[in-house]
Length: 138
Picture 1 (cartoon, rainbow, N blue to C red):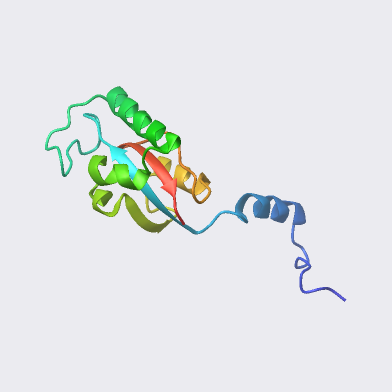
Picture 2 (picture 1 turned 90 degrees about the vertical axis):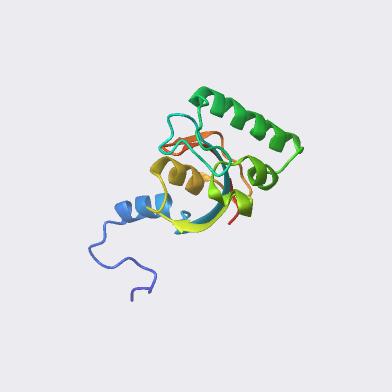
């Protein structure tokens, strides 16, 4: 007699095991907060606080890295820094983007967000919007 947990007859169990090992722990949605710094080559080089952004990508990365250092030293949280410094409209919510699923964000941002554990902070992530620090919160 077959157990209800046995794979159906004809199933390639090797492929099934490979699929499950890659996808079993991958959530369907994540919740993140982020801090976005735009630069002159961003898709839309303007924000709520700066009408015409002229900083270079390198300058944006340096700025973001200094924020990451502050967070890692415990001098600030990403939420606090996003309120005053993020170029995203989510700044008013401390960078909280809420929950999102696959295919809802730019690929590089989404990939980084889904790889993080809850409470983990990303390295600098580049997207068409600019450069980001991402913290997974759910």
